[in-house]
Length: 219
Image 1 (cartoon, rainbow, N blue to C red):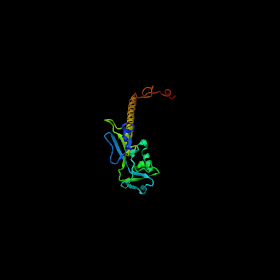
Image 2 (cartoon, rainbow, N blue to C red):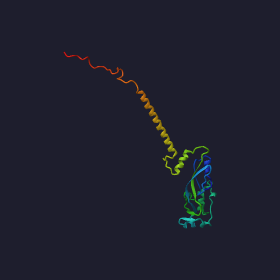
Image 3 (cartoon, rainbow, N blue to C red):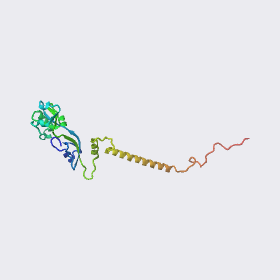
Image 4 (tube, rainbow, N blue to C red):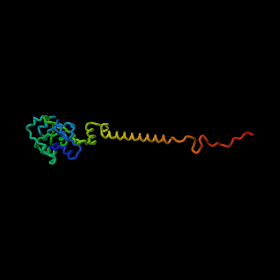
């Protein structure tokens, strides 16, 4: 799910996308009977406040229980059609309230009038990659398998990659065809070499023309 609560799996169901990245609470994998989900990495939450807020006095992390008296904004009030996280942080900069977002979102929409600090005491989120499971006896899409293999750390030239396996199969088939053609050529050459043996063409076996006339005796 993204920051506005939309579920990117709808893009899979509609066929718009073959794979999607999705964010979900850490420890709550949204995989189901129709969807594969691989968790990739954790994202720490950050609290965003307007400049000159007391938040600036903290060096690194801020405990959430020290902010209980603050006014808070809700990302659900800022769907994409009204500007999403960018608009929410603009409202924060105006001094309307504080907001907690994943650290990557805070960095993406960083503003000079907003300060951000990692906040503890609130769940982190995790980024994962999702794709649909094949229906019935349908095989996995080899392109999806290839991408997932790379995401999992498999090298592009790994023998486990579908494209590499396909190249190896193709190379083996070509080599086998070459060997078969070579064997057929050798057999044909053997058959064509089994004719008559003897002297040069046009002459009698063992014969040939003498050079010069008959030998003359001495007088």
